Length: 524
Image 1 (cartoon, helix red, strand yellow):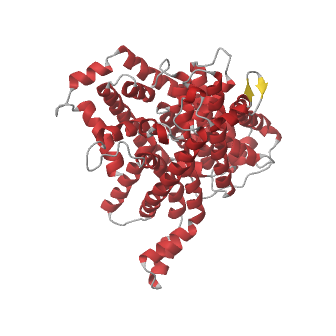
Image 2: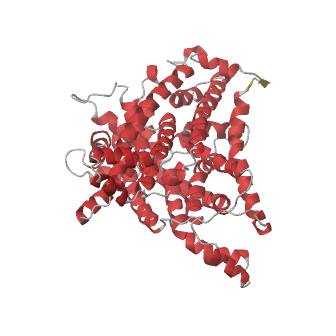
Image 3: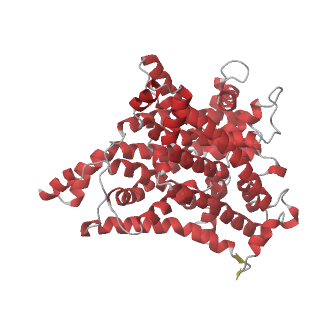
């Protein structure tokens, strides 16, 4: 973590603020005073705020249904909500391009906004649902008996009790929206640039490394503040251990159920549009786009075929998953302990926060940092393929920790003490007690880490070589090439990548561990 995260990020900070050994206040002010920089920052904040507000409005009915009601099709709704969250951002962007093709919203702010909401509905639904199902419904029933209407009950009782978890979900969604890269790049390009895409453009198109570094530092400061605030809110929103059983829907639940089902259907529509577009070419139904995945595109525009890129992606994702599980499992076991010394407890709190930083710090910043730091012996790794799985593992480690930590913390210390008193060595206690109980959670964390690594795009755009490109990078290159054949290949490749991710999510869901809840309700 120190070599591959702290060092690259610190290097970016140094290049942005201390280019000649001293603080360059004039250079920083010059970059921040540029009209384009101010437009990009304002657009990023406004877009993230709007997407957060819409996501909260649409996610609340789904959260209620998942937390309180039991009906046929509930599992389908839960899966429909979860799938967008684990889809690669490039796939989400391609799906909305297919959905809004030949409409006034194609390539507009509305398209970007819709894609961000689509991606983050699961965060609100799962985060709030975990807290909602722990609330005792008898207070609401008592208020109804006393004559309070549904709106008044929700506003005066339910909403006040859910306020910490709603605030936590809003903070997380705002964080994800403000650091979104692949979706914004595919749908907005240079016309609708956010801080994240502007860093990429400054680095790869204009070679303005100073401005890119300044923006990276500014984004890093905002992300750290958001993480600190979210962690404080999450501690207040920690759900009770008790969970109240879901009940069958009643007549008064009809509006909320209908709203939740409409949201679920809306989440499926972009994926359906993507599949439909992949099966059409020149106005006719065909499998030609899928057959073309064995080629390198029109005029051999690619160095590898999409199928070869998928093989690269699977190999990199497997290596990244192994690294993430190794680091995340050790970190989760360490954080699950409850030391008595105040200094040790503060150290674990700091470690917990540090492990969450890669989830909020720009992947573009990390990839940029790799290029400017790992460029000299003994760590000249700029052309090494190892950088891709390392960068992917950095993004996956926080999710592994957040998935494993609640399960490990639920293990009573007396169980470990009893095993130790019977002569079990510390390593055997961990192996038989911790890992034995957390085995299913570890499998779910493995699937989640693999899916995230498979679709990682931000850092990989900097680090992947043309002859070892991943599928998300190949998809983005295809949509940037002229010709309908290349666009058709991009949609077909997106469907293939989405299918792999959905298959992994389906496997995780069968474990019935709901990893997204574990992730989004932990301390970020």
